[in-house]
Image 1 (cartoon, rainbow, N blue to C red):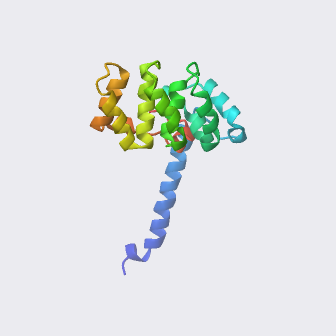
Image 2 (spheres, rainbow, N blue to C red):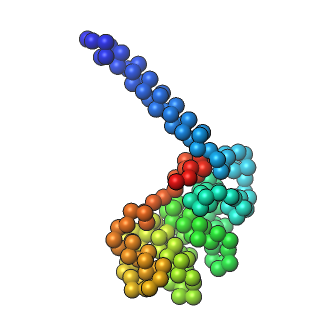
Length: 179
């Protein structure tokens, strides 16, 4: 038995501890936009208000909703039907990001409403695709000939463009990580 094999368990513990410490430090150093406080555990209405008023880079705008999680979904589903909802695109993306299957009827309605802005329809397609890839591909096939954002998103869905499948994690939201 040599030195390495004799101390293998302690080396493994040291590496695990070191790796955990690095992750914690990275998260702490990245904390800039959203702080985990008791207010993050408040009502869905409070979470929605934080969503409306949060400041920061575009890729962090849905963080208050991600942090609130399941409890905010019913109010987001109600609000996202309003075509004048502030930050509606990010609310639509939040529903797909979290794979909330309860959102499918609302997302389908937005996608299939020709009176909707094409970028909202494209966002709805992205979210549908995140929740159910086969259904996303089916809808993308129907919209492939559109000459707008929806058509562009349809091409991305059908070609398997990796950016279309990106999700924002809970840890990214907590840390306020910005790409």
